[in-house]
Image 1 (cartoon, one colour):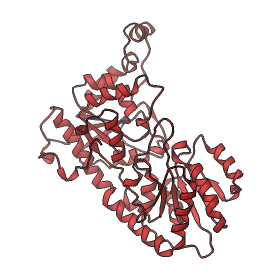
Image 2 (cartoon, rainbow, N blue to C red):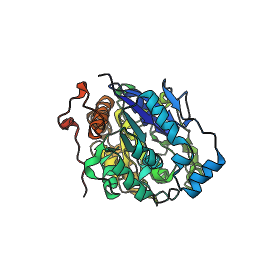
Image 3 (cartoon, one colour):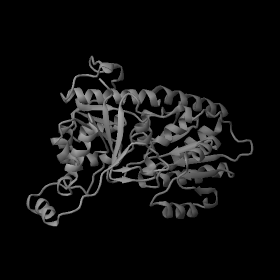
Image 4 (cartoon, rainbow, N blue to C red):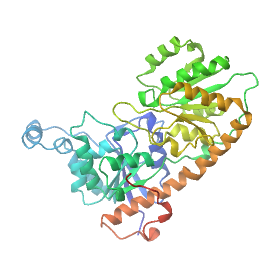
Length: 408
């Protein structure tokens, strides 16, 4: 038997903040994969050799209106996507489709129910939010959970949230973000002799990332470290508001909004920094983090992290050993954590070493890819679509990869 063929479906391939998806798809090696997408974005940033663009269908207005308003068929049917997907997957002889993001799975639900091969859906954080733009989203998620053999979550906290939303625990599998460690060498950090502490955060500028809390904490930190500078790598709708906040706090000249960086320039920023901030918080729509990629990258380079007790962050950062964790939206506690790390050269060095060891142990990319490929095989067998592949003979499907997934 040859390798399984996996269709990796992502509506847009790829937005700048989706590097973790690119790394995952590109690193698959025990299966053959191709990408299915409606929209190709940032092709130079995320080159991939086998991409199928799902073409927009010419619209027959009478048929479109009949299906949409009279028959009340879902968008994937009345927009003509259903037939295109079926034809494309048959032509490529796909054994399974991996759908990235829960809301995309909801959109494709009619197809998932009818296709004769299995799908798995992975949840990443924003897709567990309350989505006002999707009617009956929680109920549709429950239908999605019923329709697929396995549901993938990036963290235990996301898995717990999915159980609360109705996902059967026995269908959940945790597949963590994988970090290619060879791209993130360890840097031995010492306190700056000239007092020029360099603090950084790398994220989209949206409420969930807590950048306003970072700015307030940095303003407190600067009182004892007046030469400190804060670099914020990323873009987003909150940038004008955050710039105004920095000006109001009197720190604007020492806060640098530097936009999305190439991997090479981001690596340079990690290497030249002393502290990494990521005080994520839960917005009103209950959006939450899995485990932020930038936290893992920073830890891999030995950069001490000060973050919050939010989402999957405590699954990566052990308070007082590999970083510092404080309550959400508490800039005073965050500033104290920064001071604690800066106060002792030994803490700075030892915390960085332990941080890298934690990433090696739980987030190394090859191990996470092996696990994902086992989950693909498990889903195919659970669906009854095929016998186990010879290379992946299953006896309870690699129990060494099992992690706790249970309702409270």
